[in-house]
Image 1: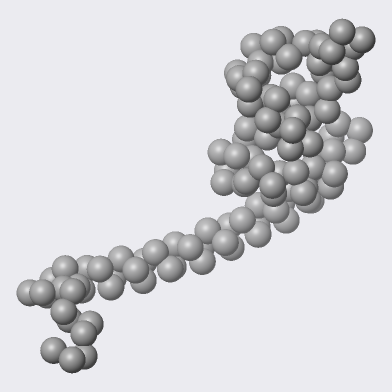
Image 2: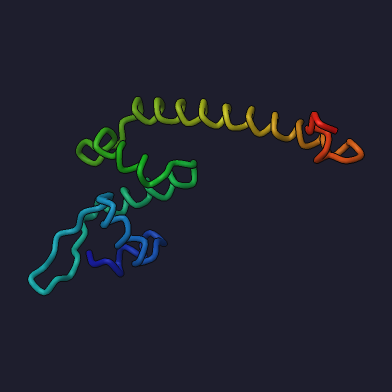
Length: 122
């Protein structure tokens, strides 16, 4: 199928599909006149890319893990479970850091002059 058909069926823009191709995430074959022709599996792959992005994975992370995930067009449940567990641990770390930052900001906001409170010379 051509790029416009993939865009229409996946809800992803043609520009995004070209970007995915540039990043090596999808691979069309080219016809003699230069048209991109995508295999049917591309629809499932683009769906995976969209979902992975919604779950907080970068395109770089997605690209690194595609070879592990796609064997004969089927995603490996074990690999996905490991990736999701790792992403959860990263999110937990970020949440903890943000809660610490929030506590510091709340403490400073409660003071008369929040910027001077951390200055030992005053």
